[in-house]
Length: 286
Ligand SMILES: [Zn+2]
Image (cartoon, rainbow, N blue to C red; front, side):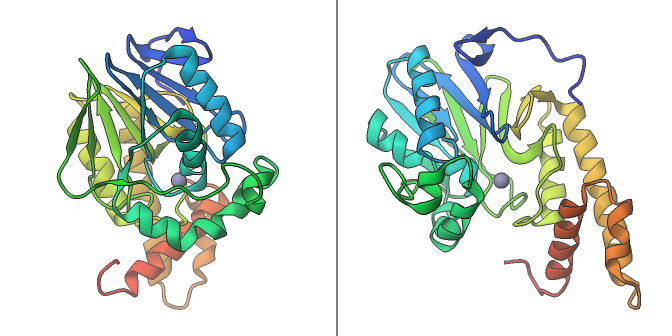
């Protein structure tokens, strides 16, 4: 899956070290990636895990690398990326949590429903019982313009390229490395449940267009990849949309017949078709 041109990175305290100040690690349960960028004055943690158990493991791993004050960024409003926020606030003294502005609204709307997805991994979080299980919302919100955050000798850039995997996917760039959240997915199929497929394809195109800025891409799940991988995902999505729409537009056909010929698993294919049908019935996507 990953390109053979990717370098072999050293592993430090369980983190894959991408350069002298940037790290990533994957959760054992979902392969969800958390990033760590360390400046001379503060450090940034990108995505906090699916509840207090994962967040504690992540926080301990962060403290094995740095004692600096921590700022948090959430790539989007899905449980496996945001449910550890409360632990980070309560135990690491985090003040600022950055995310796209729609994340707060999405968490207010779907946060309770999303608790069921952590079943078997974060039992306290599922039941909202115990410490650090409250939903903790981002308080620093990205609007349309990119935001640079100076960590001391290292600057990270938060930016938004449009709706994609969700309506609020925030990208985080630092020194040739792009944390793409679930816009890019390695080792498993992309997830379309809350997606905007046409917009997602456009966003992948925009990422490819800045390939010289970011030769290394960290997916929301799985191993680091390069831009060839993103190009492959772009073409796959284009094919997936074409096949799905052809099936939808054959008025008498059962569109579910398209599922076996789509380049994704049955569940993801079903969600892709559902989202395309939904967007076709809307004058404008919300
Ligand atoms: Zn997601």
